[in-house]
Amino acid sequence: MSHNKLQGPIPASLGTLQHLTSISLARNELNGSLPDSFGQLSELSYFDVSCNRLAGSLSEEHFSKLIRLNELHLGSNSFILNVSSNWIPPFQLFELGMNLCNLGPSFPTWLQSQKKVWDLDLSNASISRPIPLSNQYIQLLDLSNNFFSGPIPLSIGEFMPYLSFLSLSGNQIIGPVPPSIGHMRIAAVIDLSRNSLAGSIPWTLSNCSHLIVLDLGNNNLSGTIPQSFGSLRLLQSLHLRNNKLSGELPFSFCNLSNLETLDLSYNRLSGNIPAWVGAAFMKLRILNLSFNAFTGGLPFELSNLSSLHVLDLAGNHLSGSIPPTFGDLKAMDQEETINKYLLYGRLAGHYYEERLVVSTKGQILEYTKTLSLIVSMDLSNNKLSGEFPKKLTNLRGLVTLNLSSNCINCSIPENISGMRQLGSLDLSSNKLSGVIPRSMSSLSYLGYLNLSNNNLSGVIPFIGQITTFDASAFNGNPGLCGAPLVTKCEGENQDQGQSTIDQEEENDNGFIDEWFYLSVGLGFAVGILFPFFILAFKRSWCEAYFSFVDKIVNKLGLARRGATNGRNQRG
Image (cartoon, rainbow, N blue to C red; front, side):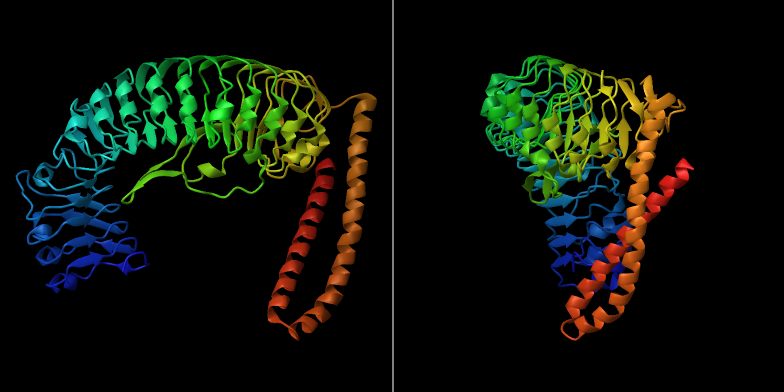
């Protein structure tokens, strides 16, 4: 009865079904506590009530006669385990899931009696103290988001050579990454992120030839990236973000043809961004080399990365111009993006969920489940000069564009309105000149705009989407005038500029007024007669017709309201 919408408490009477061997009530909306009577089901081998709203204390009585139990899934509830420290369960489990339950503060000692467990999920379980070694046959181990302290046991790889999924992320672990992890030769996912690990990255990790995901991000690791990583040919996601790594990008990375995510941001990497990146990573969706010490120009070969959704090279020492070929990035030219969860290493219900920190709309945000909807290019905080390539406006699917804090010295392209999906545009702190294109007002998804600290001039085209931004978006441009700035335009330029805008809007308004009333009249007449004609043939045609009329009326109403608001603001 899993994956339904069952509500209310679990009936205690279920505990009287003595011959019951399997109970699956996962992913419902059950609440209340778990009845003590379940401890009497001596034939029960499979018990799954995960992903509900259950709570309460679990005592030894709940498990007293479960001698045949081998799979127990209580996770994603609010249970509190309350058993004595010397309790020995009557069962031997193969799988145990108690994520998001309260098992702490100490690691449950009774687990040491479970010699057959191969799948153990105790993530988010409020456990502290050092990580124990209890079962050499375990294959999936998730202890993430707890309060484990101390180092990773140096012999973990030798003691647990059959691990295929290991997550210790989000703890307080210190010390080095044990070289013995290289003995986990069948590991597909190793996630040690968000700890305080120090020292160098052991080259022995390259022995894990089945690795799909390696995440060592947000630690204190130092030294260089091992050249031996080039042998990890199945690797799809590599995160080394926010460490103290130095040196150049290893040439051996050109062998990682299956790589989809490469995040090396916030390190001390240096040298040029190699041109071979554009030839080696044809499946790459995310390239984040931001806030390092890379120098040189932007290799035009990056435009060959046809699957690239996120390009983040911000915060380096890159110079030269932006290659016009960046406008050829195919994945950024797609207006429709399907939200596909980026999940890797799916193993018996476990997986690694891709995550990425993105600078957008003036904020630093972390994306997970909606990450595949992010289409972003961030080249900010470099030394780039030259023009804003007109071909860049071909990127119709781009959602975030940040070129701020460079030395770009040109005008804003008039055809910037072609970037129809743009939601965040930051061109601040450059040397942009000329006027703000009136076409920018048609970017209907634009929710963040920063053009401050440039050399822009003329009247701000305060219409359409531009009216949603305050003065901070335009400050630091001495030649700009008009709303929303307090600086009023002077003389003939202001009169001509404003009158041009007024005249164009009046023309637009007249057009809207005429067609609005004409459409209402025609719609009234046709709306009475036409549906009866349609109904005589097919009902689905009638429904489609009314849907069409609704859309037209809504659009006309919105257009008229927009025109009226524009006149009121000027008045």
